[in-house]
Length: 85
Image 1 (spheres, rainbow, N blue to C red):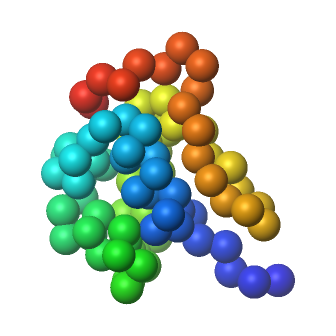
Image 2: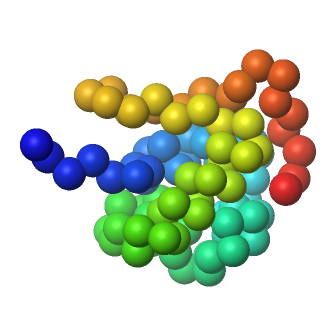
């Protein structure tokens, strides 16, 4: 079975776009560095597991639902507000 990332570069960019967050806002919400977010979104590096989990959790806490599987994606939960963390 192939390794499935906790969050893909595409999911991260799309989720951040749904929330209208900057990379800095996501980094602050996830308590990681902007370099970590930037590297993930460029697809050049995969962050450490704890950092990836923190990024995903910050986005989920803000109302993003992750669609995993063969065609990963994201969507905004009904009733979720696009507000800063």
